[in-house]
Image (tube, rainbow over all chains, first blue to last red; front, side, top):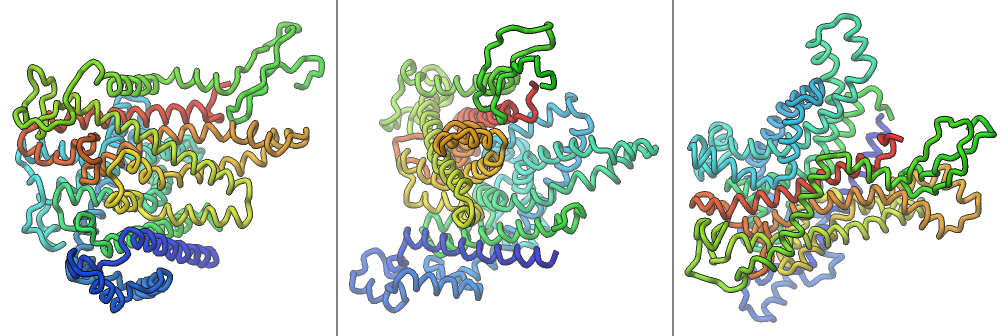
Length: 315
Length: 318
């Protein structure tokens, strides 16, 4: 077990370095130096060259890459010349709000998807099962922003229950937490997209488990259906969800980006989106690398968690 | 099989739905329970056509191909010149789906946008499938250190959230249909590479491949006649999902403002200002195009699911 974790950690470190190298080279290829951002587009070539020299942008790429990797180890994500702030400070400011949105949506989607998947498996091929499958399939094929637009139209504009975008007054994570009406639509939209894929897996996992002998045994010894479902089926059927949550981190990040843009909610995704418009490459690089690291960490935690949770998975 | 007198007349269907060899039936002694198993592909086709949802999905796809490519031939609209006199008209006579903020007819624009969505979807998934199949096949066949290096590269690229890479590249390259297909396709080959490698690894050890090898098949024949046809089912299923994903990503790019250059249209670009349309009450600029988008992606997913079921040999009735 310890050997396995150490081996997985080593691979994770190598993959993380690879992510940083590839992202750096790609962004560096798109924008070799931020000089024209700092000095303005009309600056002379000589002034630009001098600035590049004094800030190290004239060195060979490999040297710049090594410097970047060295900074990354110390959690320096570079400097945003457009916003005149270090990227780490910007991330620190926005990460809480994004994390709140992501975690709330993840929690909500699990709370819906797990019971829904089990109910669909228990009453398989019923009208309810078909309806839920149809809705899930449609949601799964729907761009998240389009679902958000529909919700804005009906719940915000027509019925006026929720605000169509998150108010500018919500500036801290705590405010986001204490103003549930402001955040309801973004959380629900993000969660609905996750429910679509989670409940499909949950349904098939529950179906597999329902056919197993231990369920038959539990029923044969006279346990109530409720006890069979909640004490026996639930725990076993949820195991694949651990892996699924780990794998869904890139999707959550991407979903976050679209939802934050749609609802104008100031998080990391909106920061990234604005950086795309202003071509603020250090923010783009940092968020891409951060996304990669979160993916690696998510997979790692999921793999370790599944070996802890499932005694059959012993390595 | 146990009775040596009884002729074996089962078609030698490839174990994974590969093309089988049909042995003609000469005679049926003692009229036993003798039947002919048709070739893998024909069985898969029958299985697919039995799936009503899949047939509906296929019909929707065919409809959209006809609607988007032949529609403009019948329904002429101006899609290149700005017309300030006809902006934001609600649906009515002359404009069945109204007009957008540039004065373009919305129905004609949906057709034009559908063309780009379908072309980019197919082109991007083609690029991804070709690269992925070659990459995975080379890794699976070579094995050892080559396999290790090739697959670690896949692991690394797969860890970077796909939408982020595509968006970063789209800041520079998203103006033309070719550019968008390339940036979408160039980072979508990772999943097919993994699938094909896995398939090649299992196929390599299968009895029918060993049998072919023992019978003296050359390496080329082994790859062309046995490995590729049998790995093809996995690739085909993946292509349909790739098309769906490419069309979704294209919509995201358009919505976020990294779409095609004017006057080219795509469904995502048309939804780029959707938020303002919704708050201004211009519903005809949001829901028809959104519904088309969902319908095409849903149809691709339904067809893909049915193909997976039809080509999955374990679930197949024999």
